[in-house]
Figure (spheres, rainbow, N blue to C red):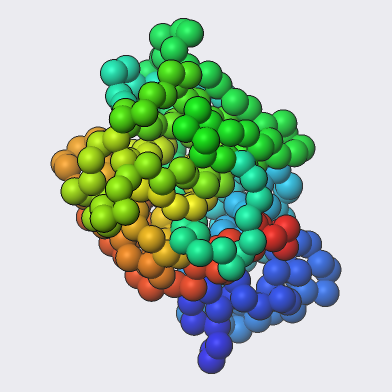
Length: 280
């Protein structure tokens, strides 16, 4: 059907948003529409899952067309309680307007917490947001973070000038990273280690210089959407792979197929940042 070919087409439709929010009339409309357009089922389901993730902490009512197993998996990572992440040893907040420059949305849907190692206290501090609200905080380098409901962030307590910066995230968070690199540094892979801010979450590391981005970590699937600036993705398990993303690209990773290469496709980043302005 013209106008509804990709997940972004559904995400931009107000009637579809009302359907995900549980509106009875919209639910009836989209159930009939999906039955009449089975070829768009995959894009429909992906868009429904994305909107459900952006509404973390609220129950998502899947359509009748969703397989029971897919619905159960979606509910599981939407309502899984935040738990303490375990850190790798010896490895180096506030709301923002949708139109702000260098905004990068990183939608990371990852499986399990088996990748974490226990930090050695008291070298790390753990921040947790309540189940029904957000938490704003300032990191030792003056970077700002907003944790979404039920999310957990762990960072070192002794960041020093000239040292690399790392954070370990489980859940969803928005970062405004303090730019510590020289103005001439533009290429993330070639930047000095001290310039990088790295977010560790499951099978991927996300490295940035100074920018703004969001991370979602709720299941086995990983999505990274870049609005502007530069982000480098790196595998933390299996064969080494690095991917330098360009603005307007979405990178995908699925833990069920770990050997598959990281791939990108063009998207409209603003459709993945609706929660920034409180639309979802």
